[in-house]
Length: 428
Ligand code: SDX
Image (cartoon, rainbow, N blue to C red; front, side, top):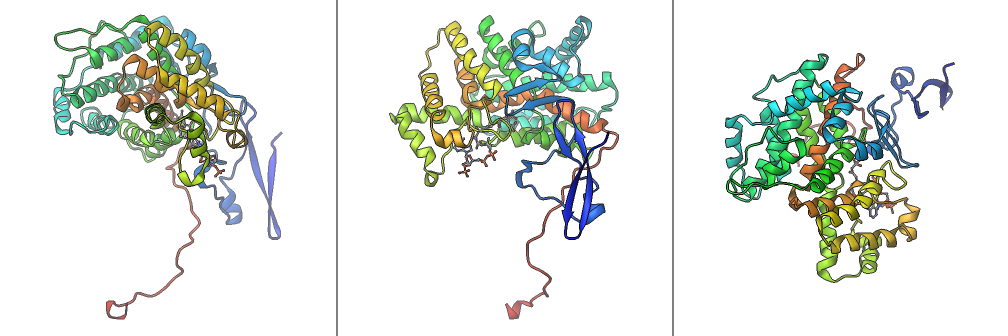
């Protein structure tokens, strides 16, 4: 039985259909509101607005639940691999052995960059931020591949997706090598996804880097936990750009740009910079917390707070527990982890944070693990992007395959000057 919401305005009542999702989320469908009533809605920052119906990821922000295609991220982080999770996020089901083998083969097939693309890196300044390079090079990749893929065709789609997921590693590692003036390292087709990335990052022509199983596992878990997160800022950007029928590379490149902001994916780098500032300044955690609470200081506790999670981000919970085992396995002591723990303890017992339901998010502990692995600080958000690529691709395709899909074009409320006449220069 269909349910309706009623909107009463002036002397009229409008009936708006209600949509109920498989997890009983309830939405008022306003797609016919303007036609019925001439009214539009206003929702600065879209905090109350659903942009689409999606089958990819479910979040319960109050209970701290996150599932990709119904699978809890905790189980995937424990039992899956990033490559298997990427396949499942994009295609909707866990792959069979043969499907996974075929996907892995595609990743190996596409791991090289066109030699002409490699020359682009020499054009970037040595201090260029790797996120700028990543976004530029993903778009440049589009020049070498069919501009528009047929998202309806699974094989063609999987090939293009594998191309992007594979080459993004090579681009990221090449950007790092360029920034330190080292020669770029070619991928090795005998290495699995994460090991191959670490090889390209840390091997040298005269010295091959062999990651320990603990490092590979930690990075795999990091990438799994970042694979998707429904309609976050960067994913919504990918869907927005893709809605104009822009090709996959242009859409993903725009997602990289959105992720770069320090309120979004750039927060993992900002958290470490914050912890280093506290550590090196000798400031106490209490002093730092008091500064954050002072609005005039215009400071935030980076890695805390979330638009959706009003409880502990399940990814932060997992990464916090992983910190101990990873650092212990790597024999790494981290004073920054001690500071992070103290900050969390202090904040979760402070009314400023409790009243605003501010809890650690995915970025609060993730940087501790990346730092322990040896990933350079300015590559942290690139690591977030590598993890998020499968989610962006899945949402781009879901948008394209939507039979009712339209270009995304929000309305606005105009609050500027009303009509007025042009003033000749001599009268101004
Ligand atoms: C990610 O959306 C996603 O799903 C993103 C993500 C994903 O996987 O894609 O989960 C990844 O981006 C995680 C978030 C990483 N960003 C940070 O850690 C930066 C620090 N956090 C924030 O700036 C903030 O919490 C946001 C951006 C995450 C959410 O911002 P909102 O929902 O717009 O909340 P808001 O800015 O309106 O804050 C509400 C109140 C304000 O105080 P009052 O005006 O009510 O007095 O809470 C305060 C804010 O000042 N506040 C904080 C705070 N975050 C919010 N105060 C201190 N420190 C913080 N971190």
